[in-house]
Amino acid sequence: MTDRELAHLIKMANQITINLAYGDSLEQSAGRVSDHIVRFWATPMKNKIKSYAQDGGQELHVITKAAVLRLS
Image 1 (cartoon, one colour):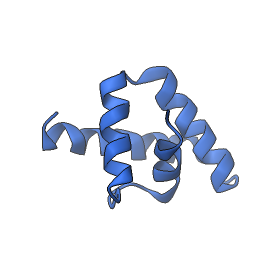
Image 2 (tube, rainbow, N blue to C red):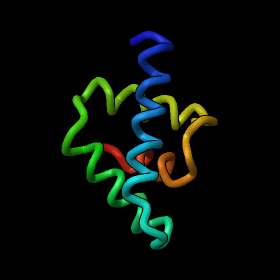
Image 3 (cartoon, rainbow, N blue to C red):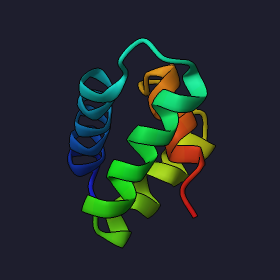
């Protein structure tokens, strides 16, 4: 996966957070975001974004990063 593809995954994941973070706790919001990614993203996409988050994930929203680090 190219850097351009990773940038797109980061953008999509952060947009999911914007749409699903209703002002609840970080844990509740991260759970909704993680559930969405699990249900709708392909395995290579999940693996790439999780690897990025584990390496620091500087461009991920704090809720997005928490959600991605929950992925198995």
